[in-house]
Length: 291
Image 1: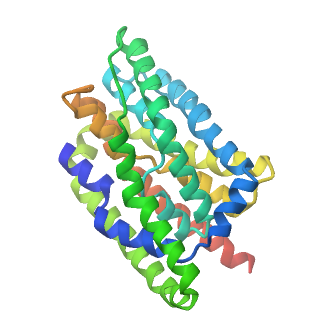
Image 2: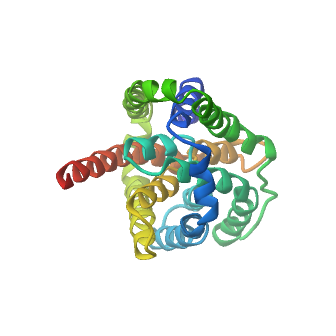
């Protein structure tokens, strides 16, 4: 189960590297300058990720009366930054990809502090003890190598060869769609045993948390006057968690060394891909009807 979960949530890094390179071809450096000049969407997104979601998750796991290991796994999931595929989902849903990449990058750095805090707090709450849980720089650098670096290469290519970037935009969107379908299918097949065994116990809470994450990420920004494309980016950034990171923390012999804590992120990864794909369809359907 753990090996399958890692493979699924890493999502074929080589393919994702190429897709992120393609997404970068649709962006300009000015897109990132605009976000940094008007940081309200970033601030709202970070607040939802680092404060709102952990509190909601804590309420859910307490109300669900889950086993301590599963409860800690859920809390670790809530604290984890956006996954490498959140920008892909944002792109397919017509969201602000530059904002998605910016949020993911900042969240990954902040996770070095927030994940250990929430991990140790959860262990104290559910087990009455704490452990030396840390998130090292190498784990953060992996995200940058897979997602941020290729996207920035794409931005650079567009700045030098805009015609090439425009010609590649449609093929990249097709490749991204096929990649998403492949990941969802592989996730379903690989996690089937986990779904059957733990779905009745953990699946309901994981699904509810995922749906709440999507709703919070989309509607809270709209309440603050943030435009819809950016609300879509925030929703995907905080709902598509880096489940592979949580699995690694849970099963590592030098960290938590508890395979039960890896069950929530394994199930959540499957659920998030499914609901994310549904959200993409709903966003695009709504856009077509509005035209």
